[in-house]
Image (cartoon, rainbow, N blue to C red; front, side, top):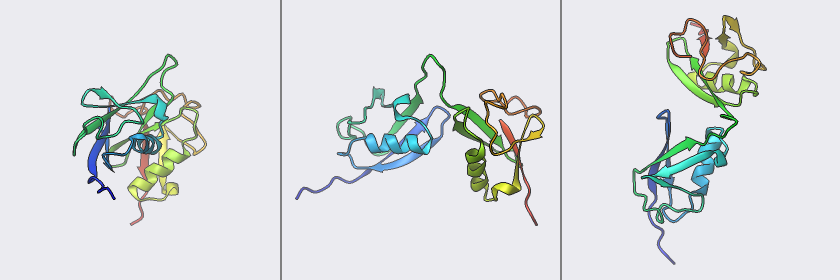
Length: 171
């Protein structure tokens, strides 16, 4: 029986600098890593270009084949077509002025984003208000309905843009 090679840890990084770590078998195809990354970030795998050390990566490549080593960084860059991005960036600014970016479909209801943000700050979604343009957003609202341009944060939010949130914490 062949001895399995020790797994290596690689980082997949997007253009905004956010990253995810993966432990992978050097002889395994990169397909699972790419699909996992895209699933987690709500991206379509065919709409993302993966590269490492200046080389484009393909689903059937293996870390061993492309000479990846422990700690290598894989860049994940969305491929833009003539129609423009299929997802937009929505920024949520919390009550402590921290900002979180979400990539969402402009026609998708904001409920999933609201739930994800509420989970990330440890509060029930019903205890967090999401404000845009001076009014509270509902879970079934979409960025498209609210004419929320990509990267917009609403009035009074400096020169950065997105949905403001206000958490109501009980003492």
